[in-house]
Image (cartoon, rainbow, N blue to C red; front, side, top):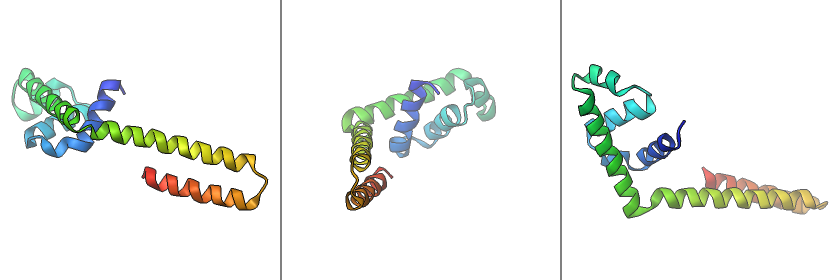
Length: 117
């Protein structure tokens, strides 16, 4: 999966409801179902260029929402921070001989993992 595809699908997960029905449908077919522009055009009865225009407008809309809100960037930062915190708790657990500290580290790891979703 390309970096652009990964970025677009993540933006779609967060902001897809902001798109028109047609934009959502074509975007989903292109990015999630991996259909080509030609296949989508054949299925919906418009030109390949028409499909491309709709998908490009959808991409621009998603990017604009992210520029304005930064929700996806904050989500990714939080995910990285939670992963780091879990790694630190696992390191603390492995460094201790105390069963009490190991148990507390396990509780902390579970809580952080729950926060990750």
